Image (cartoon, rainbow, N blue to C red; front, top):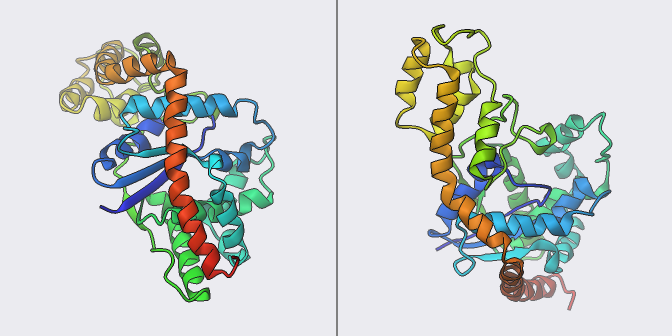
Length: 328
């Protein structure tokens, strides 16, 4: 098996879009690869450095989310990034030889700065510019062979490969493999208002939410604005509820689509049907999450065990890295 490494930032309550976009795929990959999954608290500091008051709570909540989704702590190494000092150490070493132009051309660098214009966040920092180097260090510290990414993240992984090639060339040894992408067929969910599902927009459905909260969120979803009466022909392509039906109610979706277009089913009934399907599909996750919330000690033990396992690999590989760089 190849080795996979991936992580997520603990930047607030996990939502259903995060699950469908990445975590659901991780659960499948754990049966196909040797996997390391880390909570990227150092990466969270690149944009949330001014307020870290909820960091530890967010880390605990993210671990609960991962476990309730089905990540097995025995199959996988689940750990916290900052607990392994070699992440920061390798990022520093790689930064010595990474050209500035490589970082400035990363597409998401300027995009994210532009998106946050007018907010109170200042991303014109050394840490934010250099986060692709930290990301590269995360991956190659464990000599990962594969990284699960979406199509929009391929530029980041290509930069990692460039850093790998440069390092191996400079120090005359194939220390790191070039990690390959494992493209996930993520199910993209919009927010309940039609925009991108994001905590900053307040339009999310929390992951592991109880049935009543899921139902309440579905009732708030925007539907076809041109449809006034139940008998009016609907346009499912502009309806947020329909997009969720396509993901959570695939078998009945074609029938519901036809009924909507013919004015045979109303929006209230359609939302009720969706709520029943979603709550049935997510019931096990909600139950397991509720149980884990009562066991904070167990969750901490899982992370500590993961930290120990990750540290063994990180220390061994860092020894080799320092040797080829003549730092020992």
